Length: 235
Image 1 (cartoon, helix red, strand yellow):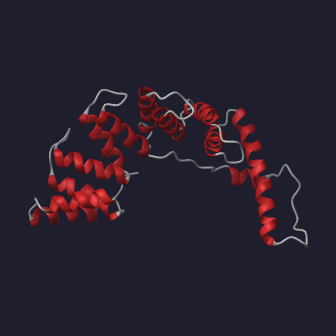
Image 2 (cartoon, rainbow, N blue to C red):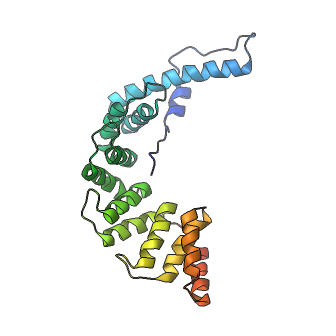
């Protein structure tokens, strides 16, 4: 799964108080040029304001600053600093930062690659209900990467993510249930999970669902489709 980020507090801060004078549009400028200059001014303020808040131990700002360094938004890209700021927020319990730090350890971005630390940070975020972290943790248990292989725990974490509507988790959970790997084999449930993922455009889920139809009875297929229609995500 990819990292995610949100810059939730910027709008309120930027439009609540400006550190720079307001920019007026010179008559000779086009609206496009004016908007570009205005955006540049706002972007400049965004980094400075976020850095001040982050240094003041504001957890949301620490997360946002990590995201800015990770993507090079308003500042030169620096994965080591991104990881450092994500860590500051993660240690204060920010689930998004915990997930992102786990991702960076899993892929060796800005830090040395360490699957065990990736699992640890994924677990922290997963226990707070982060679906992406639940999925990645489940896949770690499935493969035994950074943790002892455990199909039962893998299925459990994948189910938590699938129940929140995460498509890759739904597809993989369907495959596990079809195989009876760590869970009771159940073709109807396997079809339902793959059908849900297929409805969101997951190609592998479509192929898996269609393959299941060849070994299921019409009654089983009808029941699985009924369960698919009635399913709602847990929040």
